[in-house]
Image (cartoon, rainbow, N blue to C red; front, side):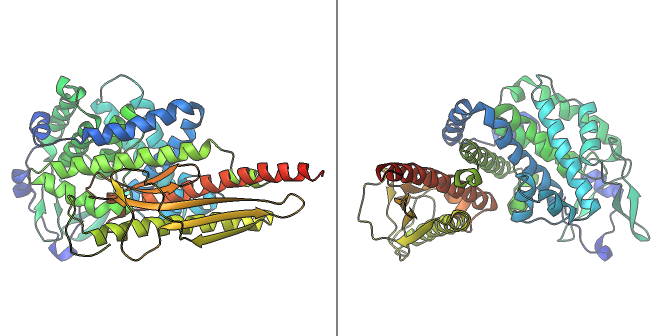
Length: 477
């Protein structure tokens, strides 16, 4: 998973690297240096619990989207193939022509992704059982997640060679790597791997671990496995999968690490190698919240029939507590609002093309209505914060609906604050975290807004249909 330098720099003295190996920390040491933002966690998981209880029959489909997205990108993070937002979520959502989209990647990539999707189903099955993680299960997980990978690259005296990948077996050759800066990153020596894996499983069976917060469990299990690197290849995929066991058990969602977060991911692991464990814990928290929010929005969307069926800032004054200027906060809000506006325009275009309806998107002014949250403010820098959405149908069933959407930004923005787009008519809110918007919007947010826009347009069409029917009856048709 770590970056390997050019071949001319790839010589490693295995004995020296073995001697430099630093065993993974005990759970007590790891947890004593970390903290969890439990108030934030509780806020998101509480809202998620409400959604699950309201629509339990739709939960399977919503969770499957997130699980498949995690499975698709886990191999891309390793560099086995390339993905982008469109590809990942076409396959994850099993959207139209998703199988053809997968086929276009070629038979090798298709097989890799399919084995990873199967492995994440395998993890879910295990996570629902009240049994501890054991070495035999981890080896079997490696077999499943690497089933379609036949070989891996090994540096030898004559250069890079392809070796058969031993699946479900601990490594029999050193797998230390040369990093981009030329330094050697050591992993567990071959002869120490069984002992370290025994210690790893014992740590995961300890009372302190089992009673810990699921984010702490997932972060520790992931990091400890990566430190050992017990297999010839596929260690990152296995580590992300094992971490998902604990997020599954807590919230039924996997650890959703997408390719666009890879740099932050690697950085957090490098910090952990220096004994700074908070970054990897924070990273796992963010990615779990990504999974929870995407699942939540998918649940809300799935509660309605498909859309097709519905149609038969001043800069430099001061810095907020999160370290952002007002201009940066405003700019993040405008990015959020523009993404929302674009997705609404796309969904309305689909609706208009399909049904012959007429629609209009216009910018305010709308006045100064009441803020949805006391901790919010209206953006003050130049930009659009008001969206007037109107949809009309023609005679004899002529009717129209109009909804106004307004952007609010956090007044004293910290890393735990949300941006809000308020539907003035229904008072429903669309939310995004600052960490999803700054310095640039994340892939997970962009996909979530697509789901949100589809849901809103679906509701607008249904509202229009109801009004149009009443209009036709009034006219005697």
